[in-house]
Length: 386
Image (tube, rainbow, N blue to C red; front, top):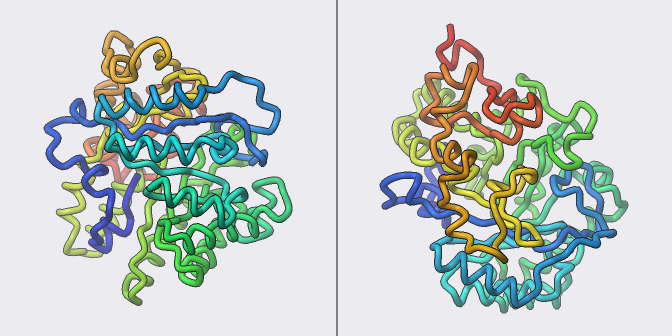
């Protein structure tokens, strides 16, 4: 995650200590935020779903008791956050109970949901569970969102869910996957946040896995990506100046960090040196280090997108043992990505900031997990190849 509001506007945000792992001497000491895809079932069939979820899921899902066992393992290992995802996690009726159990074990519990199943009663249950945060997917304005989510009415249902969370006193934010259909709507999405008093948004770059690899012309061009990141930065700064101090982040393209830093240098922004230091703190702390994934059946992956890279299963071996087992060649390399990346990534002068970007996307687009990530939109001149 690249904290646009934190880095560009200097805001203080609740996850700063986790994101910048203050006190950790190295990435090897950092404990991962764990995404638990607790079900594959979903009431929607979204075009970009990395888990290819739908309503016809017959695969084994961990029981409530096994869910508690997973949380015990994560808490014992020191993972700070469990993120309930899916599929649609609220199709599991035990999610509030399991979230509350995680909180009692000393973890933060958050949820990623399409929002369509959240009514007043559900929001109150989530609030009672001491859930830290509810992230609701909004992929554009009404028509765009419904088309992307493949159901008429999905936008309004999600908006009602957001309002129910807000009225229950839950911190709620948006999750928006950037694509050709919605980038022109970003100003209106920010306006929606102001109007609905939504304090946080994460803009996700598309990763070409699951159904996401089937979206026609799915990836934005490099020029379009630069434009959309500039738009996000500009609106964040404008709203901050107006007193709307919302948290704005981009996700799944670590090139956003050096791009922001270079822009700040060009603008002679007084915070550029501080930003460089913070970006170096997070460099390499994503897949296999700062983020991990457990599947609905207990399988462990380096992140939620690399679903063909099974590392082990928590029903057979504790998560901490799986995560720290460097006899696994992939995990050993992920702990030190900079050593193994190839192509323009290996020669990039900004490698210490992003550590070679996103490996799952590199493999999806090239067939080589260590090839240069073509999602990087920085020019050869900017990265020091010219």
